[in-house]
Amino acid sequence: QVQLVESGGGLVQAGGSLRLSCAASGRSFSSYNMGWFRQAPGKEREFVAVIRWSGGSTYYADAVKGRFTISRDNAKNTVYLQMNSLKPEDTAVYYCAANDRLRWGFTTTQYDYWGQGTQVTVSS
Image (spheres, rainbow, N blue to C red):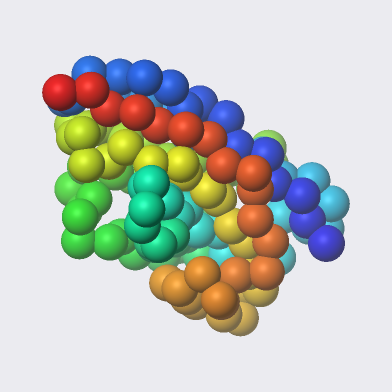
């Protein structure tokens, strides 16, 4: 089992930046690939980015490619999402999630553990 706690959300103007953090506790953090998802009001939860357990591979949704960067520090049991050039359509609750290192996934059903989410609001 692994427990995940997100932080770093808030209110920012369009064009601004935020960095989200997700701290993990429990089983070895390096056993998991880590993903970020988001859910806007009235919409389904959608994939944002994923990073392999080693940090060696990343993948992004087209909507955030070139603006967001996912990274991890296995020594600190933490994954990050640096969000630049934010747009109002990025407004959502952002969740981090973990899945087994042997599974490389982009859908919610492929992830075993979830944090409680952190709100990001981008004003125009």
